[in-house]
Length: 348
Image 1 (cartoon, rainbow, N blue to C red):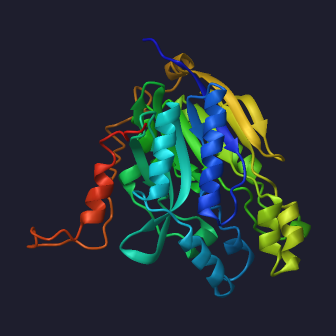
Image 2 (image 1 turned 180 degrees about the vertical axis):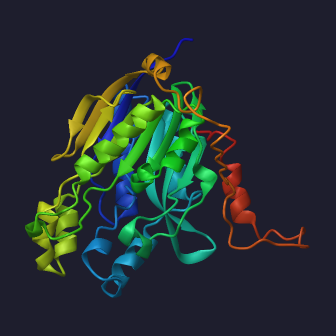
């Protein structure tokens, strides 16, 4: 079995906060830069377009209406022009791209999801995942997702899967990817995770939490792990504090996300970034996924399938099911989205 050695890049960068058009252009430029440095898989953080809704953690929902409207206005359709441009860029550079974004829907003006796409090196959509359960205050922003995106893509650079932020705490979601032979696991994270006031000394340590979760998954899956967190830059900081200066101390003292890589034994390798924006790189020798399987293979001999039985519903949730109306095209948006998975994007 000949397994590849893959150079990967993780974008430890800030979006142009709540501006999807400007953030997209930044992403396209970064893809070109990473591709020029030999990266074959390029990963962006959770909700990179148009940014993570930090504001949902800072103020009660009744004070967040304007922020929510801004978020909705800058969320993307899966078959919209922004996604088309992103896919064309991946195809032009012949790289795989994992992108976190806030997703809109054509059947509602206010329903959005915390989503991620994996784009193939030919521009095809290899996977489209919606976060199963928005975490904590995210529930006031994003709708729950479904199991349709619990997919591992078999590619020329390995079998790639991924989960968004807190999903990496869900052992059943993680197992559903391990059971598909996952070799590279992408976990995407927000720039900060505000909880209690820093003065209490009890603020959530997202750096330790993320490293524990990613390392545990890599150790159990015997897969390489990519932790990709974004940063909160001065532009976003100023936007958040403009209307309430009292949150400045909380934002400044909340632990910043880290971007790094782990091996199939959970050991850190490659670059590690936290304080400053940048692109982190690492090389994955996928042959290193084999030997640890001899110790524990939780989807092979090291399990009891006569005792445990996991069923996963991959049905894409739709708001309505039409009966006796075969001549209508009411489900056209869903059909159009589904069709994008099969065909590569033709680009000049």
